[in-house]
Image 1 (cartoon, rainbow, N blue to C red):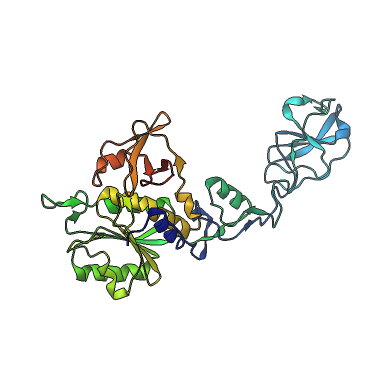
Image 2 (cartoon, helix red, strand yellow; image 1 turned 90 degrees about the vertical axis):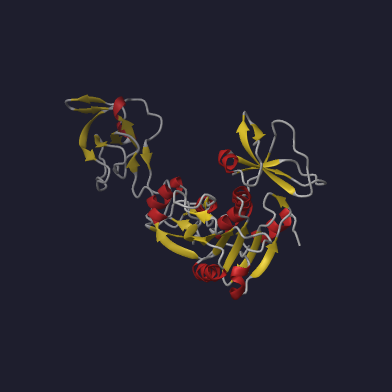
Length: 388
């Protein structure tokens, strides 16, 4: 039975649950998703430090010429207490005397042989970053489910974390099928076809948080396909099969998993392109079957595989489905019995549909920026767009 798009998507999203946690070195954690709250292991700053180059003083000594008791640099030990009539030369990030009231910036101080002359008026701001003013030990800096963005990496390192607990990335096996396929740049017959789809799927998996653990190009031989299915099921959380998704005599995408007892969750969706897309489960892995035509494969991968990978990696799956209201430049195509997903580019705030919407059009696919969703006839939804 052919499912409506939103029904199939809802079923898929129910499978997109975060994987288990793992601890990884901080340098390997960028854009990973936290599996637990990230708490500070230290205070920041650990001691009160100067925010400027200048002189640490007591407020009672404003307007006086003070003896310079010493210097403090970033990384120095905490200097001794100030006494009346003295100041401490300090530099940005340097610890200040515990009883210092403020740092007077060096531009406001006049150096004299007998000492440093301070302004009489109280300067605006004390230019001291007090101990723990940024965060204190045990404080939650980033909540569970947050992404470790480059700026979040700064906070994690500042809190003294060298390893963090994150959601494990899904391991993804990509199996491209078809006797006609060959590696790009490799010799082949006149009618051989460079394998293009597995490269696009690999890039999409990596973009949304997955690790490609296997990528194979397989001929239409049942014995080889069954062996590849066994290997993929043993090592991966998600298996992506490209090609062999229709009902042709040599379409083996589903039958290659027969020995593993695959459960089909859905097969065929009322969309164009990409009707043959399917979802199954074998052992502990989900299996996503994509059509063989490049545009059909990449459209269905963007609609179904991207949110699945995002969800398994710990994000809200809808992170990958940020639909926006769309305004098309020109006439809106007629609606049909299936939801249409059309390729488009952005022009002056509007969307211009690509001229060639054929399911095998790879040049148009490569030039497109946006996927336009035009729901089937009889629905009230308007036109929406999604970044490809």
